[in-house]
Image: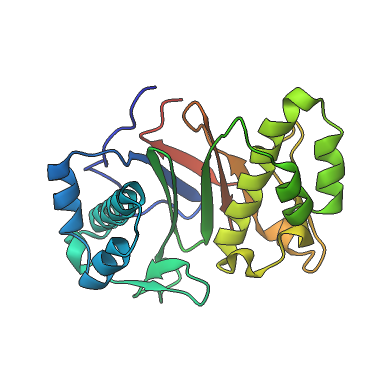
Length: 247
């Protein structure tokens, strides 16, 4: 597998209004790199990471937050330690100065060896990255989280197609939920996304809020082999600009 590229050092100040910048970054790092990333975190962020009992998860959490701070610092022309971050009611990160219409919006997701960060100017975004597990018993998860129409469509596929379709559906749904900022506090079976092979990613229908299907666009991302990723953006036809992806 080809490793992801490091954080780009020369970036546009902000994406254009119709753009989303997408960054694929490595979570694997040397002890020296990890210490450098750890130094970028606030004391509260370090304490939260250090409460994780699993050493790998602890390392990934520190690397993820450190790389996010590096990237946002590059965009803002600020040292990473001075980037002020806040959490919404349901945990979505945003800039503490998120007040102006053209403020930087972002979202991130990490899985396995990789971190994906989506960045836009003034439009909410959500991103999800999942490492594909070939042994996953996905039927109970689909029955719990997928809309009845999604379940019917998924299980009507050939068995060999179902695992990939499950991850395709899951990442699209989670990207949307993360983009809205409410996560799984909103029932995941209250809306339907496309999942069939060769069908473009889309929020097909939202049963509680029909206007959502017009407000949000979904896109699949060119994830590394063995991964699946999707983006949700409050932009009608977003132009995607990739950094670190090997397409």
